[in-house]
Amino acid sequence: MSQTVIALGAHVFDVQVRPVEAIPDGQGATLVDQIRFSPAGTAAGTALTLSKLGAAVRTAGAVGTDPIGDLLLSMLAGHGVDTSLVLRRDDTQTSASVLPIRPDGSRPAFHVLGANISYGPDDAPHTEIAEATHLHMGAPELMGGEAAAKTLAPARAAGVVTSADLLVAGDSGLFDWIAPALPYLDHLLPNEEQVLGLTGAATLEDGARRFLAEGVGCVAVTRGARGALVVTEDEVIEIPAFAVDVVDTTGCGDAFSAGFLRGLGLGRGPRECGVLGCAAAALVAQGLGSDHGDFDLATADAFATTAATLESR
Image (cartoon, rainbow, N blue to C red; front, side, top):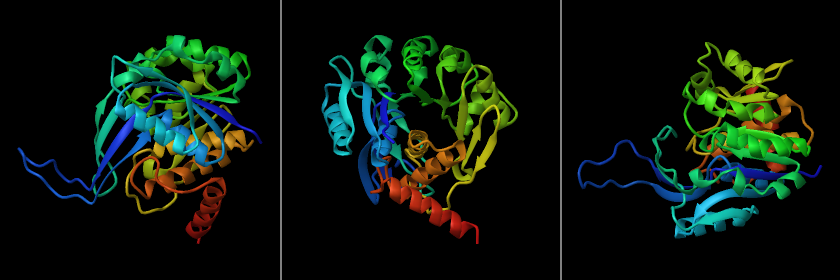
């Protein structure tokens, strides 16, 4: 089944350092095992894994005209992502993060918003979006719900399947900020912290249903080591995470989104989409960076089947 996705929004250049237990005092130094970099962000990171899984993917957003932007775009292109819709900005740098990875795979972040916050609905490639099968908006909160709706609404009217993921942590004040975009989303793919923080709900299901009440068709929530929860009007589906040795959690949410969306493009149901999302996240988590893993759709499906069989014994 043919699937063409435009991933629109956050493009981030990540630098990962591993392992980091503490920042040295003063001008001190410490040796680490790895320093590497990768394309990331709720648009670019999702696009990268979608391409691995066999979708035709284009990204849209903004980066600087700096060397970081050059490298980010070249790395995406190396993974088969079409970056011709990405705008270059002369007056701001490419968004970037430095991520000290702890031994358990978790990480804080030092982040520059950069060109991502300069992108708005007037920049969106509306003609190309209308010709795609899917539009995935990474971090609609960076432009606000009213602005995001100006891109999502015509996409929906053109018959494009729409989805979004969030970048920032959950904050109750943010719900009203993004609410105007929610009626135009077929799928929302946040994490547990974001759902509970945005809605103030006592349970994850209640929080997901708050989004459904605003018009979202399906909410697929990542829960870290506990997998995912997929909530629709008719179903609540718990999907366990696959047991792997976690090296780095960077990009796992984006990988889940990619797997879920690829499943949609293949005509799979909500549970199967969630399983593919969890499989993609598990494959990425076993190495450093959001681009870790030389896998494709067949590999991800086989991994999910094998891991589920082993865990059921």
